[in-house]
Structures are given as C-alpha cells and as structure tokens.
Length: 285
Image (cartoon, rainbow, N blue to C red; front, side, top):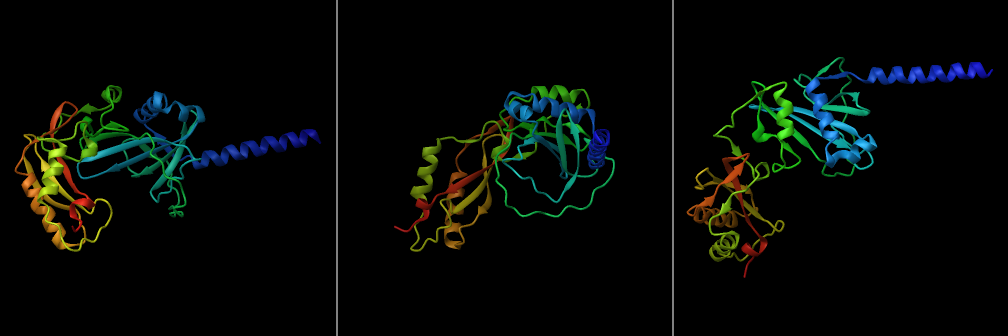
C-alpha cells in the first residue's frame, strides 16, 4: 500500500514537471543569458536574486533600433499583464517571461502559445530597475540609448559583454533626445530663476483661465548642440487657445536666449526641452 502511494507521488511529480516543460517554449541566446546573470548579480538586484523573482524580458523595435529590456518582477507587488506575451523559460533558478516580438535576435520561439487576453488592470504599479540594451538595425551596439535604470548609470560592463557578441556603433551625431534619455540636461544660460522670471513677467493674464492641473501648458523647444533654441510647438494644451497662443509667444522670447546644451555618454546632443507654464503663470489677476 505504501509502495503504491509512493509510486503515485512520483508519478504526480513527473507529470507536473512534464506540464511545466511544455510551458517553456523560449530558448535564450547566450548573450541574453549572460545579460540576465549580470542583472541579477548587480548590487541593486540582489534582493530579487535571493527571492528568485521572475525576470521579464521585453524585445521591441522601431524604425531605427532594436531594444532588449530586462527587469525583475516581484509578483507580490506587480502583476504584469500584456497581450504581447510570447512565452517563458527558466534560467539560473528564475522564471523568465518574454514579451514583445516573436522574431528576435535575443531568443528563439520553439513553439507558439495561444493568444493572450488582456486581464483587468487591478494591479499595483511600481518602478522596477530596468536595464535596456539598444542596437541599430545592423545589430551594432548603440550605447547612446542603452541604460541601467537611469541614463547616468555606468554601462561599461554591458558594453564589455556586448563586445563578445556584437559590433559597437559610432555615436550618431544627428539624433534628438528627450530629457529622460540624457545624463546632463540642457540648462537655460541665465539659470532657472531667470527662466521663470521671463515667463511670469511676460505672460498676459486672462480673465478666465480654465486650469487643467498644476502644469496647464507645456511647449517644446529644441536645444541643438550649440545651445541654440528653436520652437517646436505645444506638447500639452490648456484647452484654451488664448492661453496656448500666449505660451507660444513667451516660448519664442525664450528661444532668443542661449542654453547650455545637453551631454550624454561624453557627447553633446540635441534635446527637446519642455517649457512648463504653471497654474500661477496663467491665472487671472
């Protein structure tokens, strides 16, 4: 009787392992495996390593780049719910879940899964320590758009890893960056206090100013590598054409001044600088 029970338990274990194996439909490349190892052994992620958190891999592409993002997902804090789930595998004691493109240079899909349905958004969001590695379309490494959580973190170890598998591209001189993509943001030549003074002293108050948040208007200005500013246009409208037009006029005044240009990875770069008009700037007297 005990022997039959023992065989029953063994059968259940092997059945479970078989079912688990069927769920694993992704094969990671050696580069991706080493990147995951580097991630979980980083001092910032040791808790995720010790907890054996699942690791999320996201592979996407735009017209110029391939991106591979890696981060730990503590399931107690965050329920990752996306329709582009491709599959999963296991590596170094962690469950690896993969999202994004089926055809990728960073893994291969052994067998396709059923199309996933988006689940209800009843989850708690948090800001994970995301590493993103970027490549150009010729698969050369793009260090300018590669980062560890923030653009200011040192990526020398990622660059050394990439050298084992890919080429290294030369930094592009004509790309335009957002503020969150650069190490050092552009600065108004006269300082932030003077920038605020230009805005408040030139804004013609209106009788009725429908407020839509503490920052009702945002106007984008392009700062080139020489610190020359050029008006782009409204990023966030107030919903009132009079207020928007007034904000554009002041942005044109600001463009008459120079800026200290942004720098990133040792290069001077062009950056989009958002000029923010606060609620006190546009309120009626």
